[in-house]
View 1 (tube, rainbow, N blue to C red):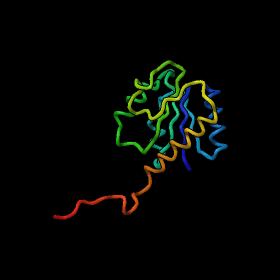
View 2 (cartoon, helix red, strand yellow):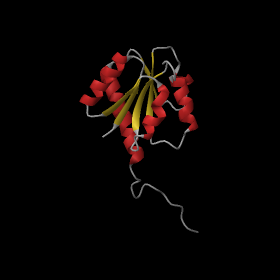
View 3 (tube, rainbow, N blue to C red):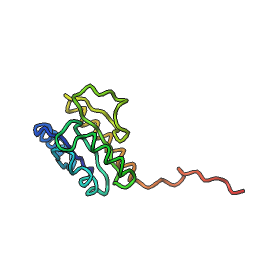
View 4 (spheres, rainbow, N blue to C red):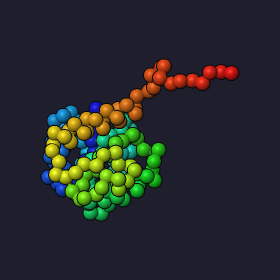
Length: 139
């Protein structure tokens, strides 16, 4: 079962997303700021999808992305959708962000997005299929 981590300082958004994702069969963890994002990722060895707000108190999305960059290659697989109501251009997103999600959003589109990101996380976990790997010919 795919895990979804929702990080947003707006309680209504957290609860709406929790309800929607749980109804779709996802396990959900809610955080109100970025303070414990790294720890929450570490607790999901099979990986997860992260929906995170950019502007939050204490530890914001920018700082979480910086921390993720420092931990590159040491965390379980994840896909990060950065949520923002600001006019942030997509080309200014930190490299850790896989998708920029504009607020306000349509719930059905967020559910589709999470399903797509969850498929990527699952694919990362799958061992390579025999025949996909090409070997160099021996000389």
